[in-house]
Structure formats: structure tokens, C-alpha cells
Length: 245
Image 1 (cartoon, rainbow, N blue to C red):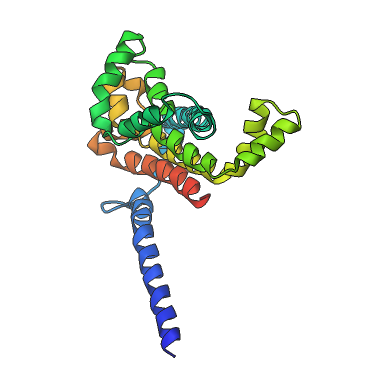
Image 2: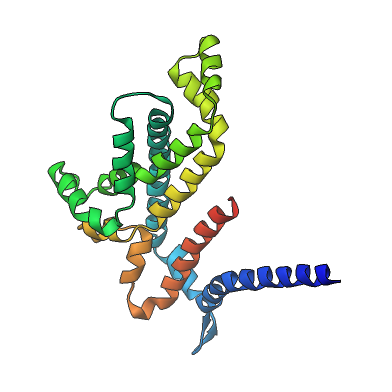
């Protein structure tokens, strides 16, 4: 009897947490189609999806940037993690310590150095100003290093005996055995890219290049229904990604 009560209490707690997490999405959906003055309306969705293409274009551009960041950061993390986890070279521990030191720095601390480097490369006000710092973010390399360390060295030796070179060993043996680390890098890099706010404001001068999540803050107050419709579009993309975890 006591065990049943404990199970019921656990289920109730989980249900309460779930309802609390879903409430903001429900509020967003309701306020996007309901105006206190006129009642039910889909004017915001009409203006966001049909009347003007600028919001949809920003959405697809933001999604394209995120996909480029995901692919680039995953490749960099795989190669970097392989180097730190399985290659023996002088100064490896020191370089890994530097990686950890950079990783714990707040984003705001790195904005100015990144801006100076990007300005020197003449990449300010281009999409590369958003892509390059995100692709070479240290967190993904740290995750893949820890994930690849868990793979026994005997697997590499067996692949070499079968005639596999370094790239084949990496992508046909090590990466499939580190799927959890790859999935973690994929999800975190997408969320970081999708939620970029400070970087576009700091690195981009042209408002037309801003991703959707930043451009929404510049929507006039009288177009709040359009802003809510775009928020539903942004939240839906993030929600679909979260459900794949």
C-alpha cells in the first residue's frame, strides 16, 4: 500500500513538472490567435506566413545557419576529440587544459576578442562571423574527447590489422561507437546556434541579416500578433528537436 502511494506521488510530481513545462507553449498558442478586443483571429499568422515573405525567409535562413553550425561543429569536434583521446603527442595535456579554460569563459568575455579577429579577417557583417566562432566552440570537442576515450584502443588496433586507414577507423569504428556523444554535440550545437542573440547584434551591422530570433525583438508593438505567430514558429522548431532526444 505504501509503495502504491509512493508511485502515485512520483507520477503526480512528474505530471506537475510536465504541465508546468507545457503551460508557456499553451499560452503562446492561445495568445497568438486571441485578441481581447476582437476575439479569435488568425491575422498574425496570415501576415507572418502569407502577406509578407520576410519572416519565413528569416526563419529558413536561421535554420540554414544552424544546420551549417551543426555539421561544422560536429566534424571539428570529432577530429579534435580523436586527437585528444587517441593520439599521443607532446603538450596534449596542456592543450586540453587550455581548451577547458576557454570553455568555462562566459560568452560575453569572448565577444570582443572574436570581434577583433573577425574584423582582421574582414568577416564582420557576413554570415561567416556567426558560423566560425560557433563551429569552433570548445564544448563539442570536450564532449567527443570524453566519448572517444571510452572506446577501447583494441578496436583501433583491430581496424588497423584489417587494413583500415585513420579516416576509416575514425568514421567506421570510433564514431559509430560514440553515437551518444555525437547526438549530444548535435543537439547542443543546434540549440546554441538557434538561440544566438549577442553574436548577431555584435557582429552584424545590417538588420536584414539578423536571424529570426533577434529580428523579432524589433517588431513594432502594434504588430504583436505577428510577433506571437513567429514565436510559435520558433518554438515549434525547438520543440520538435527536443522530442528527438
